[in-house]
Amino acid sequence: MNYKHKPYGPYERFFKRPLDVLFGFTVVIGFLWLYLLVAVLVRIKLGSPILFMQERPGREGKVFKLYKFRSMSNAKDKNGNLLPDKDRLTEFGKMLRSTSLDELPEIFNIIKGDMSVIGPRPLAVQYLPYYSEEEMHRHDVRPGLSGLAQVNGRNSICWEEKFKFDIKYVNKVTFLMDVKIFLSTIKTVLKQQDIGVRGVDSLIDFDVYRQKQLEHGGPEK
Image (cartoon, rainbow, N blue to C red; front, side):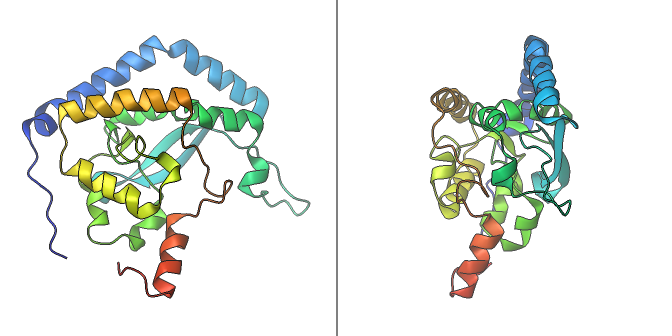
């Protein structure tokens, strides 16, 4: 597949990153009280550690450590094994996810340069071997706190549709588009639209999804 990312424009090269940093510091300073409140509630209701950290691929596939507030308990079975996600996700954890409050710590990823405010969402490292050549181009830009796919169905659309939105964004990064996605994200979060949790709401992880496709003669990587 002959696929090339478009040349980076002036906005991407000179303005997007400074705006990300400005946004990041503004949120941390302006909502420090909210960070402290959520951190205290997580500690009381779910215990420690307060933060959930997981490696995710970023720009050009470089792996970084993503920060989130914990939304699951450490409940285990009689053999000491963690219970399935659906059994560890409490009502408090569901509230954190539905309001996106669990993602507040990702602002520090934005300040560090791992992420951007707007871009394709950073997905699991184990998905990397299963992307097609075109789908891999979602990593041509920094992953985002929100993206085009998140305001066009979020978890209610299939993986291929998500990646089509990601590639569409990668090839048309503009200030106006970022503003539109940002405003649409606020609307989506407030309305709590298209929310679902993989492993909890019958949503299949991408690696499992693509393996099943390949077993039935689906798309090649």
